[in-house]
Image (cartoon, rainbow, N blue to C red; front, side, top):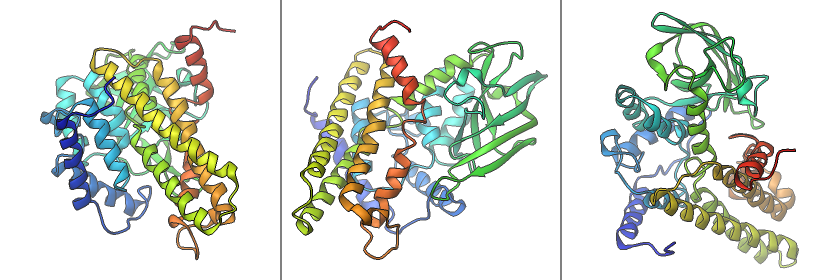
Length: 389
C-alpha cells in the first residue's frame, strides 16, 4: 500500500477543506433528533448537495462527483476535522444508498437516490423488533402480498431517525410459513403510510433518537420491494456490511475525536501537572489506535479498488471502531474527573459537555450494527476459521 497521496488526491482534500471552512454553519443548531434540529440539519444536507458534497462518491447522475474510494475517505476526514454538523441522512446515504446501487432497479435508483442525496427524503432503519434484536433472522413482522401491495402487520423498535424520517427501510417476513433467514424481504416504506403508527423513544439524554413502529394493515406498494421477494436476507447483509465497515464509520470520525482528546490533555496538564501518568497513557493509546484504524481502512480500501471484497472482515472493523470510540471518550472523562459530568451551559463546563454526551452515545456502538458478541462469533468462524463450539 502506498502511504502517500498523489497530487490529485491532495488537491481534492484542499478543495473539500476550503469549501467546508467557507460554508459550514456558524451558529449552533438544535440536536438533530428534535423536530426543530431535524429540519435544520435537513437544510445542511441540501446545502451540501448544492455544493456537490453530499454524496461525492456517487455517480454524477445521482448528485455525486464519481470520486474514488480514497478521495471519499479523505472527504470524511476533512468533514469531521472541520467540525461540520452531523449528517441527519446517514441511514440513507451510507446504508440504503449502497444497497440500492447493488440491488435496486433502474427505476428505483432514479426514484430514490436523487431525493436521498439532496435531503428531500430522510431515511430511518426499521430492522429490530421487540424479540429480535441481534438475532435478525427471527423477526416476525409479516407482509402479505395483496395485488399490487403488501399488507404489513407487526412492530419494529429502536428505529434510528424513526421519529421524523420521511421513509423507512424495513426487513419483513413475506412467507408466513418460513423460518430464520428464508422468506424475508426488504421493503421501502413511506413514513406517512396509512396504518403506520410511530412512537418516539428517547435516549438517556431525552432526545427522541429512535422510534417504535406499529404496522396495522399498513399497505405498501409492491414496487417498493428491493430485490426479489424472499431475498431480503441477502439484501440486508449488503446493508449490514456497509453499517459495520467503511461506510458508516470511516476513520475521520475517530481521528477528529482523538485530536480533540490530545488537545484536552494539553490544556489539562498545564493546569494540573500531577495528572496521573495512566491517563497520559490512555490518551496515547487512543490516538495511536485511531491512526491504526485509519491505515487499516486505507489498506482495505486499496484492496477493494483492486477488486477485493469486504465480507466478514467488516465484523472485526466494527469491533475495533466501536471499542475505540468508548476508549477515547472514557479517557476524556477520567481526565476531566467531576467536571466531566457537567452538561452544556453549565459553569466551568469543558468543550460544551461533548465528552459526556459522546461517551453516552459511544456505549451504543457495541450494540448497534450487530452486537459485538455476535461480531466476535463471525470473526472466529468466518475470518479465523475456528470451529463452532
